Image (cartoon, one colour):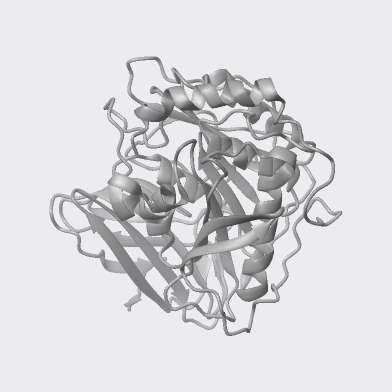
Length: 454
């Protein structure tokens, strides 16, 4: 992505934006927003329609200008199924095309690595900034976002409780602006190495927030990222703290799940020993979208939010875990969530069906596992055991805790997905390294009962 080549340009743009006052936003927003602070599940008007939109480059007239953007619709799109939707904003002098293609890292890094992890479960949008940036003058980039979202939801079936925004550097700054100005529209944001460059109109309501920043960022100092984070630590009612961050030279990262946050509004801070990049690699000063830990962590953060559920304004009853370094042999739990307190999973007749989808590259792979309860009664608390092919080692996972990282593995439910009703399906997944064998797990059982493998 030629990240180094844009460092100076980003810094210059930051100074220009600050000097010109373009960060200041008016109170007039381009789209009406619900008065409630909680998103309400609703089918968009595109549900049930034969779509006219197709994957690929698009244009729209907004704020009197023709703006371009790229849309990716899942393969085998079902117009009766509400889909998760993610806006992915590019960096200064980046483009929507690079976000969409993954640039020099290829498809494994498309949409910051989340497209591959989504396994056709998500609609992706890559907007193109004016002059390859997100100055957001007179709210034009917020209005652009509003207008694209309106167009997509009028044509496609979107889950209104599953809208997300993310981006790196200037794109991270735009994602922060979305969090401030559209807290009832977007469920959560992920800000990679951001600063307040695109404004913060509003910024008083809670939004689930994940910040990722290098400890010695030479373009946008980590103190700028901490300021963005702390706004939502306050808005979300979290307990203020100064999270532990990795020492320079350690080439590691530390993820902190803030405690005390309002239920449904977690704040996660991921600090890494590195410079200005969205794709750091533990143990190395190089960057790689294929090997970075950031994509799996952001995907885990976004997918913890269940479809059709609205955040509760009451304080969280279960504070998140204390800061921990990762990756580790057993991937950390999803933010602000802990395994089900049930000591011995029960319920269900033992009937289950499991399907797995593997996406592999060079020395790595991701795997998405769908667990369906084909029995006649509800499963309350579950453990899925399976045997990984030789040479595969789990490095990160989402929607379950995994232990150990190789051989016979047990995946245990999180606090938010421990119930599987008859006929219902829950999805989990993990990222792993491999030595050549990219096969699927074998000997799969749910709560000790063998499952049919689809």
